[in-house]
Length: 177
Ligand code: AMP
Image (cartoon, rainbow, N blue to C red; front, side, top):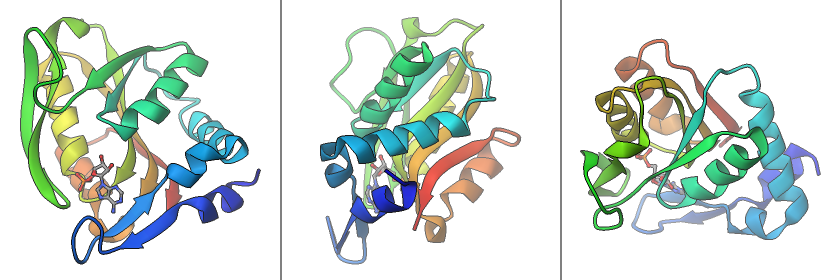
């Protein structure tokens, strides 16, 4: 399937989960094997020249694309999770995102200083979520190799936020609306 056909399957829900939000629902893409493959194939191509050994997927939809790419590219996969989901000692960061405020954490023992980490999520909106994940990776002493998103919402300027916070760290995306 062509990327443009897969793009048409991402459904827009105006005013979900609250007024003013244009929610991009990837569920129809995940349900369609050809569309899912087209998106993961394109994502893999975008990061083919990037050097990294671990992927951090952001809870919860970042796990879907993050774990598939970790599998096909033979990289380690690390979960970046919402509060109360991970045992042990955690590196944490609080943040506000497009429509709520929360905290993310990663198990401290997942990282070594040699790790070169790519962060993956489904949607980049304001960039608050990805910024928190990036800070956790740096606080853990690992190197931040880049960010990858399936969907970018350019009008919310998430890329600008990430580039300002993490100068020189590349930001990749597959679809833009
Ligand atoms: P942000 O921190 O504002 O970049 O928000 C990104 C996170 O919230 C991602 O984990 C997305 O899954 C989710 N999200 C935010 N805005 C949207 C949206 N308009 N459509 C779908 N998911 C969204």
